[in-house]
Length: 212
Image (cartoon, rainbow, N blue to C red; front, top):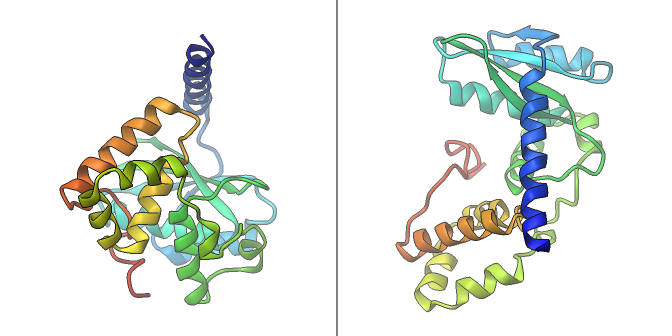
C-alpha cells in the first residue's frame, strides 16, 4: 500500500510541475547571436535578475552546440538551465535562473565545471555555489554495484568503459532511487547495454569533456 502511495506522490509531483511549467510566460527574453552575447548579459545581470529566457534559432547553427554553450555560460555564473519552450517551428526559448542553495548537482554538470575552471571561464559567483567537487565524493549505490557484479562479463565490460562514462551513466540511474520503477528500468537498460559492451546516451558533450 505504501509503495502505491509513493508512486502516486511521484506522479502527482511530476504532473504538478508540468502544469506549472506549461503556464510559465516567456518574459525577460534574450536573443543572442553568439555565446559572448550571453556572457556579456550575465556579467551585468546575473546578480540582479531572477531569470531570463534565451531564444535559440535552430536555422542558424546546430541546436546542440547552442544548448551546450548556454549551459556552460550559465554554470560559469552560478545559474542553471531549466525548462525549454517552443516558440515557432524554428525557435525555442531556454529558461535560465540562479541555482538554488543546496540544489543537487549531476556528475555531468560537475565535469563541465571542471573543464570551465581549467579554461578560466568560471566567475566568483559560479565558484561560490559549487558542491563537493572531489572525485572521491561520488559513490556508486550499493544496489547498482551488486547488480553489476552478478555477471562477470557485465562487470568486466563496465570496468573497461571510460571513467567519465561510468560516472555519468551511474549518476543518471541512482539519482532516481526514490522512483523505484524508473530506477529499475534505467539500471536494466544500463546492464543490458554493458553486457553488449555498448556505450549509449550523451556523456561527453560532443567530445568537449574528453582530453581537456
